Each structure stands twice: as C-alpha cells, then as structure tokens.
Amino acid sequence: MLIQGGDETMRCPMSNEDALHRLLTAFFDYERPEVRDFREAVELFKQDIPSRESINQGITGEDVREMIIQHILTEDIFNTIFDENQFHRENNIARELEAVILTFFTGSLRRATLLGVKHYYDVINAAASRIADHHEKQKFLKVVYETFYKSYNPKAPTVWESYTRPMKLCVS
Image (tube, rainbow, N blue to C red; front, side, top):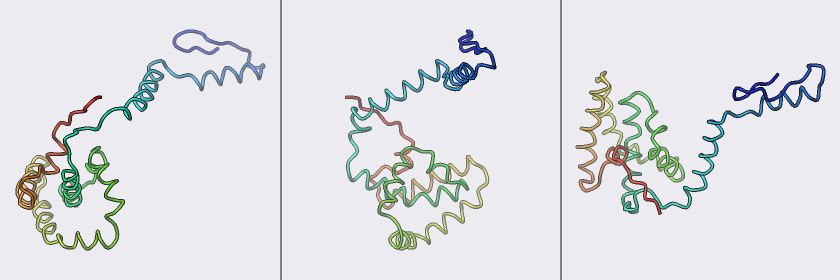
C-alpha cells in the first residue's frame, strides 16, 4: 500500500512484480506539494531574472575596478582576522568578484602585487592576532578600512561599505 499526501494512492500484492515496480517508482518519484512549488518558483525565477536590469545601475566601471582592488587587498586580512575564509565564499558580491579576479590575477602578477603590500599585511595581521573577541575583531576591521583603505582612495566607498550596504534591485 502506498500513501502519499495522506491518501492511499496505490495498492498491490508483493507477488506482482510489475505492479510493485510501479508502486515503488511512484514512491520514489513523489514530491511533496511544497517542494514541487518551490522548484517551480526557482525555475520561474531563473527564467525571469535574465530579463531584468542589473543591480544598482549607478555602478560605474571605476566602481567595479575599486571593488576588485579592495577585494584583492582584503582577502588575506579577512582570513587572518576571522581565522576563516567563509566571508569571501558566502558573500554573493565577494564570490562574484573572486570569480572575475581568478581570470586575470594569477601566478607571478598575483605574487608580485601581494609582495608589494606584504609589510602592511604583516603589521595588520600581527595586530589582529592579538584580538580574541569577535566584536573587537569587527571593530578592528572597521578601523583598518576607515584608515588604511580610505588613505589610498578617499573618494571611493570601501569594499566593506559595498558588501554591507543594501542594494536596490532595479526591475524593468
């Protein structure tokens, strides 16, 4: 006997191989209505999103360039301060920036660039390693952003602001 959605949907003797096969197939193919509705919504979303305009249409090429530079410079600092690399994997913007960066910022270019800022990383990482409290680590990171990154480009919003400020989805 097969019960789905609270109702008996099929019944067969165990000796009838064909009927048992149909019953087991129906059992394994069953999808709860809420799961089916969710999958349908995901498919509609996939079809709908490409027809929409970009997020935050005001972002310029220069803004993207700055976000990429700040992302490159912050990855090691985030990993050291929080002793993990979850942020750059779980944050949508950071993940997409990383995908772009991996297309050109590799090998000797990456090594040479990061070697040029190694002294700053060493100082920041040494200070960060003495902070145990998560709240204090966040405050420290904010200070790093407000001083270190703002000094190299005072007009640009920091990557911290880019990652944390709400973004508007512009719908056409």
